[in-house]
Amino acid sequence: MREVFEAGIANYGAPQEVLTDNGPQYKTWRGKSAFTALCERRGIEHIVATPRRPQTLGKVERFWGSLWRECLQSAIFRGLDDARVRIGHFIDYYNFQRPHQGIEGLVPADRYFEAAPQVRAALKARVADNALELAQHGVPRKSFYMTGRVGDESISLHGEGARVVLTHEDGRREEVDLASSGRRTQPGEEAAMPDPVAVGSALTALPGVDEDPPLEAPGTSPLDAGLERLREEFGAGQEEADDAGEPDEPDEGERS
Image (tube, rainbow, N blue to C red; front, side, top):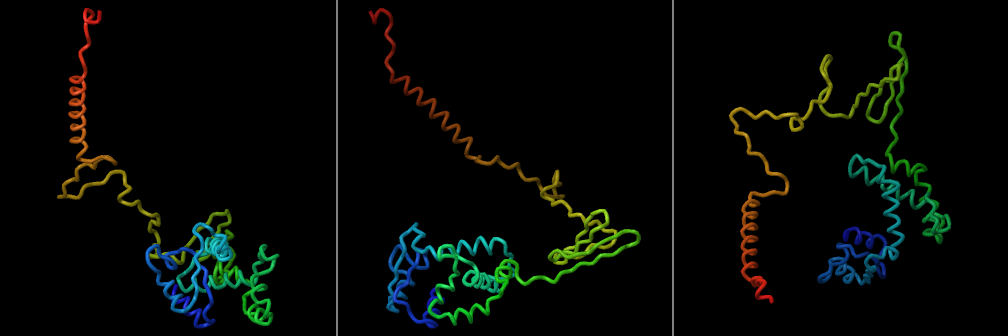
């Protein structure tokens, strides 16, 4: 985080102050954080937001929420490089295409480049028209579809992601996942997945290996029996002590 911050200073100059939340990368409860020390060396005032008050950093907090709901929840990245590119497309969409009710239906770039419209126009020309689609789903795949007849039956072939789907005339589907690992089945081979050994009905002990003793029930311990005896002995002793400490009941003559 400090590397990114210093890179921003190198590219755009040092700000007079910087506002952060109370994250451990910014603030420590003991001593001085490395980020605060960096700001002091640079002559930058470090302002820390009040804990549990997201309104102070509302704009960036809203961005994280929008990024999560509108991009990351529906996206499946092929790797870190793919994630970097596609999140970059979402930032383009967020800044130049997504209207915000809080700024009267404008996009952030309308406000940010208000004093430099030519810069906004130049940057907007480089933003893809389908930036949100690229962020959520990546580069569109080429479509694939074939239809015809085999003998007297009409069939169709089409692609669904990495799968090729054969649809019969009666609606039955057969799928081949081209991205799945492992070898392909041979003609006449059973393609069903075998049951795992640990989920079988009864496990067979290996020859020459003694069977393990039965496991204790959850929440039990070998010490439970001894503890129970101590409880019983202590309880009996306590009852005897209570009986010895109580005065004898007077008989009828004594009462009168």
